[in-house]
Image (tube, rainbow, N blue to C red):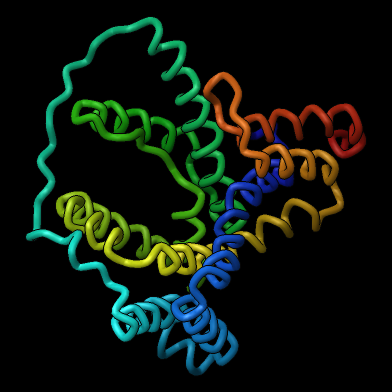
Length: 275
């Protein structure tokens, strides 16, 4: 992690986050009745500080979107059932060399380098100094426990950290992490119900919310990648490979974007490494 130039890492982050920003435009094209009011109120609350302090832009967009869904009758209540609690099922481990090579190795690279790399890069860009070794250890222990019930790997994701560091005093941003953790536990307990609620809303509503939430993070990623004047060619190659979204050996394009960007910079931008 320390050897990777930050512009190249943030170019990977920009490539991953770019689809969130594009989804806002796609949602505006496919369902303007819901997307347009959400976008309008978001930028209105962002442009007027007094209004933004009373109503955070993301909360305003969420409320307006929900109001438009209700007015237009776009909430699909047929997919909802009664409130249901999650019922974890114990999964007995089965050893397999094929799974180790085809799944575990690519997944390890993805979690440790791509997912954790995104999270660490976003936190460093926001001025924090995350304990990388402790994060890797915690993710490993969390993945071992979640595997017992067939859940996904634990990782430090970029989008989540981008949201948690998008505003507020840096010294108090940890409180957002604590609240997020509590809400995540609640979401996990009521996962079937929350999943049904998500499916009952138009996809454009989710696309706009995610895209607006990622705008500042996407902006910071591009500034860090191309604003320093160093490793710019490598960052560009990393961005292009990541956006291409082509996997190789079951490993996603974000990893190959970092590899390609690093190799190109090593060959073409040696002076940047020297300085």
